[in-house]
Amino acid sequence: MKFSLNALVWGIVGILLAISSQSFAAEKGNERVRIAVSSKSLGFLDVWAARGRGFYQKQGLDAEIIAMRPPLAIAALQAGEIDYSFGASTLLRASLSGLPVRLVSMGLRSSFHTLVAKSSIKSIPGLRGKIIAVTIGAADDVVARYLVRRGGLDPRTDVVFISMAGSDARYQSLLTGSIDATALSLPQFVMAKRQGYNVLGAAVDVLEMATVGIGTSTRKIQQEREQVKKMIRAQLDTMRWIKSQKGEVIQFLRQFYDLDEGVASESYEIFSRLMVDDVRVLPLAVKTVLEQEGKAQLPLDRVVDATIVEEVLRERR
Image (cartoon, rainbow, N blue to C red; front, side):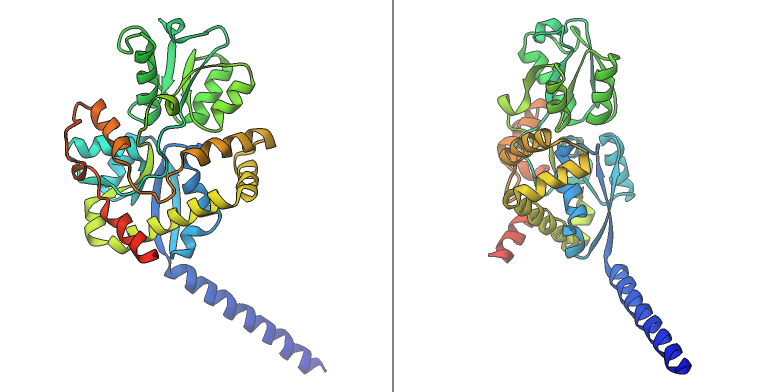
């Protein structure tokens, strides 16, 4: 009996070791990719959900997501320290400057960024001489300057722009009163609005603009095209999940971003309206960025490689 029990124990141990070994081998077979986003903002929901819900793993990718300021992400992309950056507007400007990077997909047709100010500031003209926090060079910076200019002020001389990290950090600074206004993404601008801060303008109401999408180096596109296609497949699967599984997505938002039901539901509705379901790069959204840089007539293929998404979509028909 003693011998049988020992045999049984060692048999179970052997099975567990075999399962563990197989699992390790499977994980080891995944391609490691490093992805840069500017913050934990809901604007990058497709990235966080792709990892959290296993869509990257389904494509054989072991994804590490790193929050870093957009200019640093471009430098890291150039150096090969990261593989992909999801800051579309920053990547487009880097490509315009001559760096060998391209935008290959697009997740949103505009920016969520909304200019939010202290309750004492009722309109854009009330920002004269005030401090506005942005991440210099990122989408929120572009949106804030656009809205300020549209509201009748000169963003170069009439307001004071300071550089600050992602939407979550800027939201906290708004709460503490150390800044007068900032461009917030989801879910922060919804939270700020509910706490009595004033919404002075929103990107979605005035422009279509490339802000979130997969960007990578031309070397990656040329030498590791299949990996880029895996990234796009994972993005497509994530978008389909977001579109079709509202209840699951709201639950994910509540848990991942620590939101209450109301904020999570409102954030979902806003996100789902701006999604690019097939992740194709929208020419008008790219041209908005080109116009801001004085390059409106530049051919899109100088900054965008639209061929990879088309390949993936053809394969899925």
